[in-house]
Length: 207
Image (cartoon, rainbow, N blue to C red):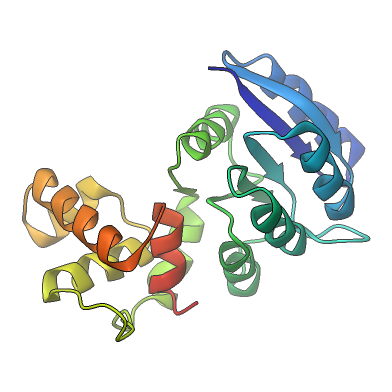
């Protein structure tokens, strides 16, 4: 399946370079580009891309606000943030708005392609520096609402997901098998009604 991609960046040189680079990648087709969040929202309504590669700080409408509009109007469209900013406010704003991935512009071509493919398949991808921020932000125990009940192990795994850890890393941290981690994640997703790992990350960070 070819992934339909929308590239959003207010800098023409960056936007055009990303569009050309990613359109050459196997299985990815850039259906449109946009210069700000408002244009991105309109482009999603017109082209129905699978993934949006979104800059954050842009004129007219920023990337976090646009992400919220896109996710509300087109839940099947995933958003991957690609920005120069890795501060706490930018990261949380993007994740709270519904972004399923967050990379900085230091990422190379392979990492950007991987993030696009992962987002299209419902997975989240976070840059290492973003994961470090999340480790600090999520150092407190994850708060679980009373509308559902998780086991102690499920709460522990939810907290580690909030730190940006993947299944192999969680297994190593807890000294259990990846299969066991997957079982716990499936159970907590079912209880909490999460539809993606990004949902779990946002919940674990305290919404």
